[in-house]
Length: 271
Image (tube, rainbow, N blue to C red; front, side, top):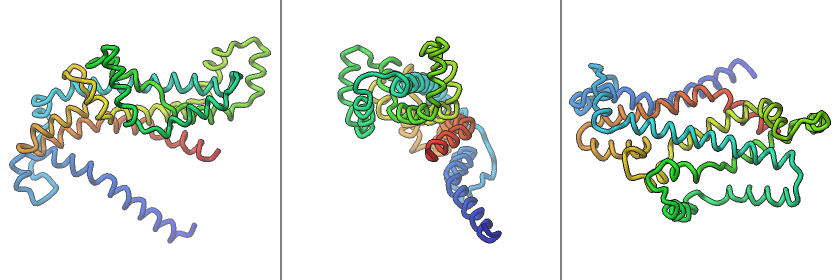
């Protein structure tokens, strides 16, 4: 690659990064403005910085409670995805049983079914079980991830069969081989699936809206909608302060897991 091509590539990357970051920077700057200053503003740069909007959003809406609820919801679902996906993928790769290929294709075909098509049956099941307005009803329908099963199966297939055969000759049980050999060799892929799972679960809106009724269970996306409905006629900077608070946990998770997410997806794409 010539120096000119490299400079053009770097310029395009910087321009793309600036476009991607602009909404977040815009929201952050507005969150630091006083409401009166925002109404009369002709510049994106606040003339006077204030953190009062962050204190107001905590007082107006129990946003911290919603963040804790979302963190618990997303964390448990992520752990559930990692457990169910890794166990299912291990069975599809290392445990022989009749019809394994057909069963795997059936599992894979569920990726073609949109989540919205399953909402009504899942909602009826939750009502029947009496799990409305509980973390159980919020979490249990999300404990399996077909994409995670597929990605981990593809990764487990790269582990040498000789390693599995040698462990069996040494008397190693299937669970011990799974725990001490397969999982340590799959850390990048597990981290990638965990990061993806946490962010997608954190951003869920429709299912938490359907199955929760009280602020003790509601998640942060419902809180954001409450905040917008309450403040859109009064203070846009307070709404932006709430959005920044809600974005921070996912940004931290993304920054921590970015390396593993990129490594895991790149490894899979090269196979």
